[in-house]
Length: 606
Image (cartoon, rainbow, N blue to C red; front, top):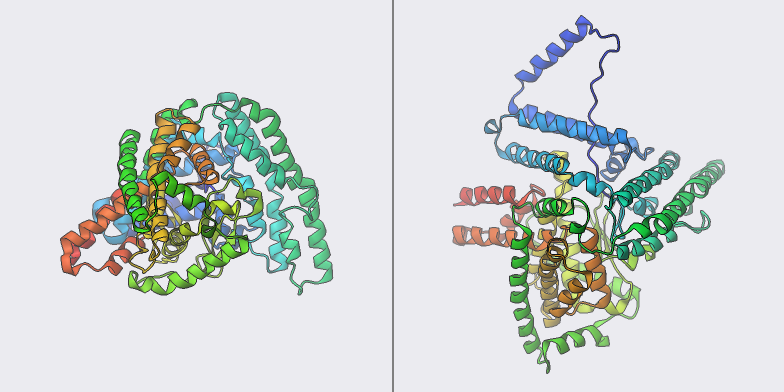
C-alpha cells in the first residue's frame, strides 16, 4: 500500500488579530531551548516529530508498524485537506533539515541526515515537476492500490489485530471509512480519465474482474468475513451477536456497494477512456514523469538510454552462461529447443498447489541452517509460506513478500503463485525462495525494521534499488550457501538474473523508446524460457508500475561492485559475513549514500 506522508500541525492565526504576551514568551523560550540543543539533538527531535506526524495522518501505516493507537481510523487520504497537510508537512521538514549543519554530524546521524535530505529533495522534485500529481490520477492498477488490500487487512495479514472485543469494535469503526475512501479513488480516476492520465486498456480490463470479485453478493460469501469466523470463544454471546450484526451491516450496506460502484465506474466510465498505447510516455507529462521514476527507482543519475544498454549487455552475458548449462546437461538441440524442454517436460512441474507449497517449505528447512556461512546477523522474525489468494493470482507475479511485525510476533509472508502450475517450474524454486524469503527480502526487511537504534523513517523506509537489488544479489549467494548443486536449479538462478536484465531493456523500451506490449513480450521470450503466463503478467506489470523494474539489476550490479571493491582493497582482511552485516544493519538507503558508507567501512578495516 502506498504510504503517504503525514501532516504537520498547521499554524493557527488568532481570528481577532492579536497574540497574547504569554504566547510570545512561550515561543521565545522554546526558541532559546531549541538553539541550545546540539545538531545531533535537533536532528533526532526532527525525526521524532516527523514520525509522529506521519503516523497521525496515516493510521493504517501505524497499525502495520505495530502502533495500535489509530486502529479505529481509516484516514482521509485523497481529500484536499489531506493533500494540503502532506504538502505543508513536507515543506516544513525540508526547511528543517536544511537548517541543520551537516558538518557537525557524524556516524549514524550523518547517514540519517543524508537519507532524510534525499527523501525531501526527491519529494520536492516530484512536486515541482508534476510527477506526484500525475501519479495520483492513476491510484489503482491490476497490481494493487488501496481498495485492493482490504482482504489482507480483514485476515489480519497487515497487522490489524482480532483478539479482543475492543479490537473488533476498532475494526468495525475503521472499515466504516472504507466506502468514502473508495469514492475518493473513483474521483481521482475520473479526473485522470478526463485529462488523459489513464491506464492502458489491457490493464484496465485485467483490473475490472478483480474488483467485480470483491463485490460479492453477501457478507458471508465475501473475502472480508474472516474476522467473524475467528471470533474468540471467550467473547460473550451478546458481544458475538452485536459484533457480527454490526459487521455484517457495514459489509453489506457500505463495503460491497462501494466495490460495486468502483466496478461499474471502471466498466462504464473508465474503460472507454483508457488508452491503446502501452508506455507512460504517451500520457500528458509522461516523459517527464518517467525520467523522475527512473531516478526515484534506481537512486542514480543514469538515463533511460544508459540503462537500456546496460540491460542488453548483461542479458547477453547471462545468455552465454545458459548455453554452458545446456552443454553440461548434454541436451541435444539448440537454445529454443532447450527452453521448450524446460517449459514442457512434466518432471519439472508440480501436480497440485499443496505439493508446490510443501516444496517451498522443504526449501526453507534446507536453506535456513546454511545462513551462518555468510551472515553474522539474522532476523528474529520468522516467515510463513502461503499461496496467493485466488482473486488476484491470475494477474500477480510468481511470488511476493509481505513484511511481518517489528516485534517478531506476526511472521512475514512469502506468497507463492500457484495459479497455472505448468508455468511454475521446479527448477526456479531455489532462487525464488532465496530472493523472497531468506536471505532475501524477509531477511533484509526484518533486520531493517528490528534495528531499534535507527530512526523510524530508516527502519520502515525503502528504495527499490536497495531492496530489490539485495533480493537479486541474494540469489547469487546460493552457490556459496551450497545450493544450485543441480544444474537445472543453477539454470533457474541464471533465468532469474536474465529476467531482471531483460527488465532494463523492456521497461525503458516501453516507456522511453515507444515499444509496444507485443515487442516487450517478444524480447523477453527471445532469450529465456519464460512461460506465456509469466511473460504477460510481467510485461503488464512494467506497464502498470513504470520504472520499478529497473531497481533490481541496477541495485544488484551496484552491490556486486561494492563487494568486489572491498575484496580488492582488503585482500585477506575481507570478511564476507561482516561485509553483509554492514550492508544490512543500517537499513535501506539510496545507492550513492550506501557506496560512500561502504567505502568508509573499507577504509576503517585497512
